[in-house]
Image (cartoon, rainbow over all chains, first blue to last red; front, side, top):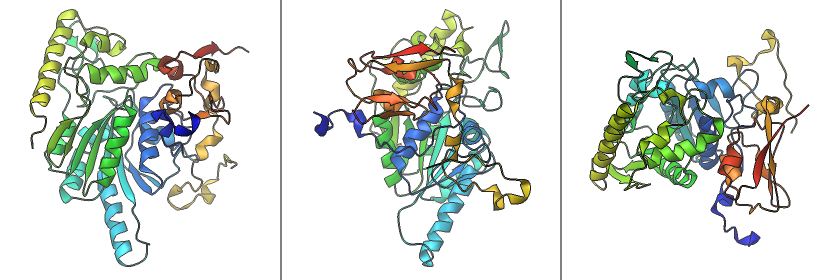
Length: 309
Length: 97
């Protein structure tokens, strides 16, 4: 049995490119997602990282948790710097100053750096067709500076700048559909990724790496601190997010949409909302309203399965 | 590999304050954040490796005998491994002085 490697989990790349000793909170699924993605991407990788949780926790000077070349850039230009790195590598190889080999250029940022502040640079990089991967780690608020709302915060979530109260439901707008914004750029590969589904994650990261042009991965990253929940539930809540339809897992490959984890019967939204303190103030009527909208969005996605967008 | 937590003076900084030792965060032992530690009962463990891939710290590794265990220098005690373990062979034990 031992020699057959029958357990798929044991085939997971064991090398840790995001070293231990980083300062992420207990149960940070974002740090887990970084570790998983870079385990799959391998060592020939250059990362440009926007300001955010992952920059703060991994690179408090003079330490670094990274074992691959890594640049810290400003909040808004991670995608621009990554595209510059890619263009630089291309010309160095052309002039013969670097041996020709496959180097993956990765831009990474949180939801604030992607959906709000860095959207312009990201849109430019996607449109110019650089062969790079942009990874958005979506923890649904500005967690690094103290849980302020972003355009990626879901409806009803209480944050420090959208506090729940007698006259407020918390965040009053719906989450921005970032993967579809990028899919509208007609890039070869766009996918939503969830670290609670590691094998789905691995196959999507490999596809993004092999894509002939820009690829975009939108990663669901549970933040126990900002979502006011128990750290041990971080993986379980990610699983529930996809089962309830809050964060459907799909990919758009050359414009064609495919749902990779189909969920014909969605779980009740209550299961997802209950463990999270940020939704504690919601009454049953509001939850039912959100559930209806989530279901609507998911069925809309289902109807587009297999279609060229 | 030894990871030195060297704090250079400002005159000694590299250009662009580049950090030249990859993975040097290993010098920071985050294990002292922990209030409970994961303990494995190897008789019930099926060596599936679910705890290994879901550890946010990456501090759970397979031992030479094939059973996983956590590196307590870095384990922050989040409790994901006992929660995700399919056989329930991991439990959290409170840290005592």
